[in-house]
Image 1 (cartoon, helix red, strand yellow):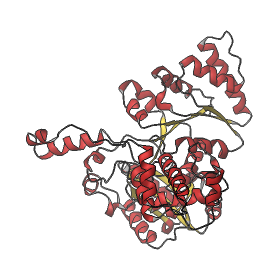
Image 2 (cartoon, rainbow, N blue to C red):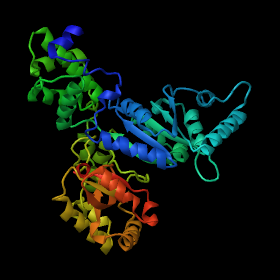
Image 3 (cartoon, rainbow, N blue to C red):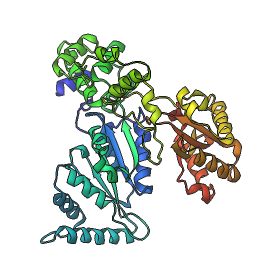
Length: 459
């Protein structure tokens, strides 16, 4: 490996598959998602869920949380979720220094609550991070729900974050999981990287490993990596590493399509969406009109995980019905761009009638976003389902009474896979200015837990 590094002038391997936080890629909404997760974990009182395909970067995100959470947050990390109910309680007790010898489940739960209350009295928050949560037995998931009930008179004592593959969503959809499902207040999804993001990701990893020359990967090579990897960061790492090794073996400093072909043949990845052998044609012959559309949509959606959520920290809600009527989504992971009411899907316009003040601020957003610099910041005041027209109009009424109405804007978004509306305020040259402005907001607005975001994340 030393010859491999010397050949390309690298300080360390750039494409290792074990999580290394120095190589955390903040593009493709990973950075904003991390910020939103930190905010949700430190400010919210529900369960947080992060889903993504195998190799999409969930464990890396979890490691970054462990590093970035404030000092007053004590983290408990559970890497092996396939534990029984009692074993999970024992693992948490061990992390908190609670003796478990001879304690029944009820007594152990009480002891855990006492330990958490003591930490709460010291001004500490305790967060349980569970990796690979989709592998948890049903009884263990139920224990997580019960643990989320531990609370003092004023606040939850244990914040829980679940990191899982999309299979967790399927399990949570079951009727017997509805109590746990309703306690998840924040949903995030890590979508695969798009081709432009793949190029930036490869460049970033090379530079982080000490590379100083021109990018050795040709445009054709990047295109092939994006296609073969299907945008999954672990697969990108494997392909890029094998391709660099192939280039080194042939004595060249450029990685082209030939090297990617060699790497792909050696990697032998299985497709994320294998084609179904099921033949739809006989069914379509016997189904007409809306029935045919509903059947096709149902079959597509049954094999589709939710797209990457907007980095908004917002209340969870069931998927809006109209989302199943959008068969034009290009790929199962692709997110729709942020849009105003005028740009929203026609079906949504037919079903949702926004009040006058909301429509006015949609217009203000459209006029502002066309010229707003990408590196500027704003304050996110609210994000909720578009169907909550009364909540949105009421919030705007309160906000316009308390703030400069010309600086309040509303946008419509489908990035989360649901039809949502966000309300934002201001335009600032830096994050520091936005944070300073947040401190001056009226208490009635602060109650909605606003946070700063960059303009580039709206595009």
